[in-house]
Length: 418
Image (cartoon, rainbow, N blue to C red; front, side, top):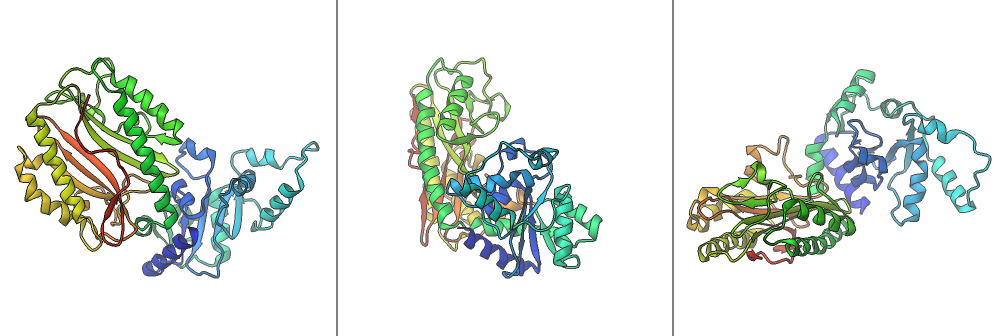
């Protein structure tokens, strides 16, 4: 898996005229090397690991990590997920590494573990540096890159390198998202597994709905279910746009007040998100408390027809925005308020939104879309916000094959009535 990623990264580095790339954002370090730390969960504003990937294949891929984290390379290897690197550069993390270096006369490692740790230690370049910036300064100076363009995914790091040694620098993310848009076979397999998980989560969520239930009860149960399924729920609530609707979303931003019970006739939006094995689950369905009116059922079916027509056109060679515009200007006109139908196709991966477009890629310019290619994983939002009868939402994630889009989720798009 890593060979394909690194090859694509190096191709893009050549296109950008860059000598290499320094990745220190935890998701990017994991993407390129498989390395992760339990301390990533701290979400610190500064990095605690990194990797340098040179364009030149004869130069080593260098993993930067705290010296005390050397043991994690052995742990990952034993768990069947060896880390991708050719050399190591270590640095101190608070006083953890000082403690780790202290002699322990009572510590006895099994022979194999000692041999592997010795092997990893032999890959370390130079001495342990006081911090990650100092480690990068030393490493890049030794590689003679100062007058060559190096891309960074953290501009604070780039600025520090510029101040310290005058390193030429640029933003790595435009290049990264182009690379990440095309998934490897291993990534696609993980996404397929995530589809099975998403269906199970939605089934569990729907089983909780009913009159008298509260949103907080459902959120807590869904979050626990996701954790039990090895899914990390979206922080704060696993339901990104979950809530009920009674002529207006309650309260703003689709959040239902925790002390309100579901009542007859309410519409419940179930956009459920979380990460499974570092890839995002993004599934959305619409439920109705009690029996829905025939008019609302017809509206939901019309939204589903728009959804299906877009999916038919999600093929390699087509532009995502053009597909949506074609449906918006034709079939969607049958809705009560056509302008309230939001159609958007976006790439998904380690981030919920990682389109192969130049920064800024979350503004109006993102609606220009991008060309669909095989091996992309795309999420399609079809969200109707009309107020006459209430909203109808649905969303699936798709694997793009050579000729079509294959949904990774199997839970029906039909209106859920409970």
